[in-house]
Figure 1 (cartoon, rainbow, N blue to C red):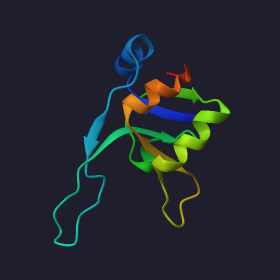
Figure 2: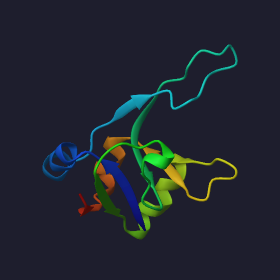
Figure 3: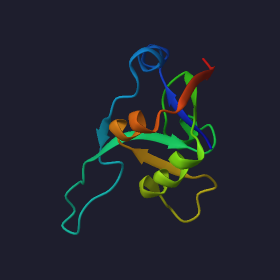
Figure 4: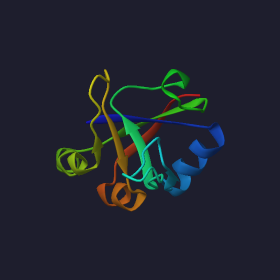
Length: 107
C-alpha cells in the first residue's frame, strides 16, 4: 500500500532522518457540547493532496507499507462520505512499528 504525506522541505528532511512525529489539532471536530476534540497523529492519504484540501507544504512523501501494516492501518482511517480520496491519522509510534519505506517524491 502506498500512501502520501505533504509537508515542508525542512520537515521532510527531519522525517527522513528521524522518522515521523505526531501533530495535533481539532481538524474541524467537536463533541456534543461544541468543545473541540484534540486529535494527534500523522496524516496520510491514498492520493497526493495539496492546498485545495487544506494542506500546506512544498514536499510530498510517499510512504510504502507491506501487507501486514495495511491491515493495521484500517483502525486509523477517517471515513468521510463524499470525499474522492481516503485519509488516515496514524500515531507516529504506530508508524514506527510498521516500518514503512519513506521517500521524497516531490519538493
